[in-house]
Picture 1 (cartoon, rainbow, N blue to C red):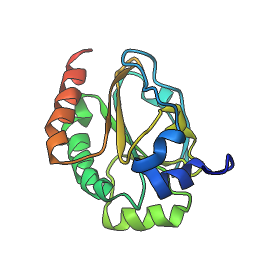
Picture 2 (cartoon, one colour; picture 1 turned 135 degrees about the vertical axis):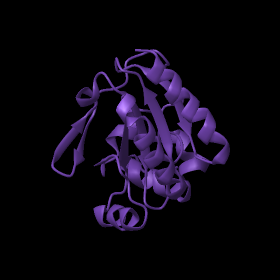
Picture 3 (cartoon, rainbow, N blue to C red; picture 1 turned 180 degrees about the horizontal axis):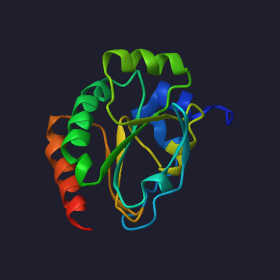
Picture 4 (cartoon, helix red, strand yellow; picture 1 turned 30 degrees about the vertical axis):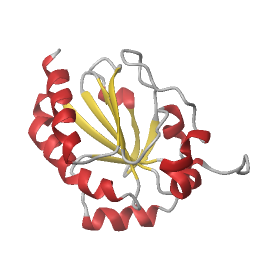
Length: 170
């Protein structure tokens, strides 16, 4: 067993998919319930969920070491471009404890959406994240619509359909 002082970032990095269940609660966030409020560091200031009230938020958790994250960024860029005018806001929360690693990732895989940083790993606990990348779709009123762990070709259409449906319900 690990030390109780083990940080979430270390937990996520060293044993995420195989043993992350002991790092986080076993229950998932409930659909239809308010999304946990958050405040994360961004380029100039902080980003808060409350900043996006009235928008559909695609909240993505990523790290520089995550292979599927490299695949998800171009897709998230496309979603932001395609649906931003209809009220979608992609917010990607980086979980690297070393900000230089995130910056290296972003040089080769830029994000054309809001990027914020949570090096202490507070938000993954709030959102009960169980895999990387993970996303949470939040409606215009700040309530959980859906959650998704991982990213691959098969998940793109399903997630995009959830985005389209949520944008249509004003």
